[in-house]
Length: 66
Image 1 (tube, rainbow, N blue to C red):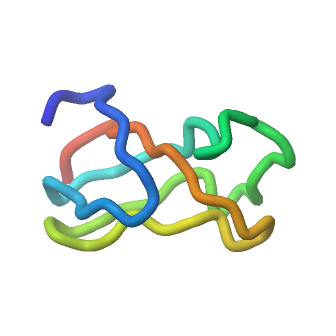
Image 2 (tube, one colour; image 1 turned 30 degrees about the horizontal axis):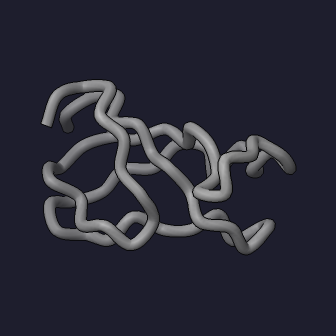
Image 3 (cartoon, rainbow, N blue to C red; image 1 turned 120 degrees about the horizontal axis):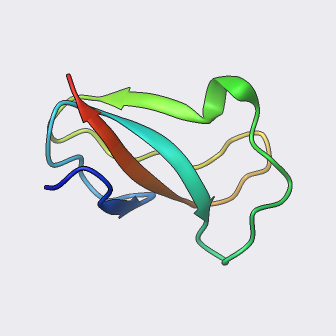
């Protein structure tokens, strides 16, 4: 679970950590998520969410442990 590791919508969070949106699961980066959707904090075992504003799956990058 190194910082910088990527996780996909639907996977379980491996740690209580902060994550930043990296790109969509279809390989695109547009449209941009809202500011509120670009960074999330998840508990261990919580599922990575989609980007609801555009109804797309996402890749999330671990940025720090909480």
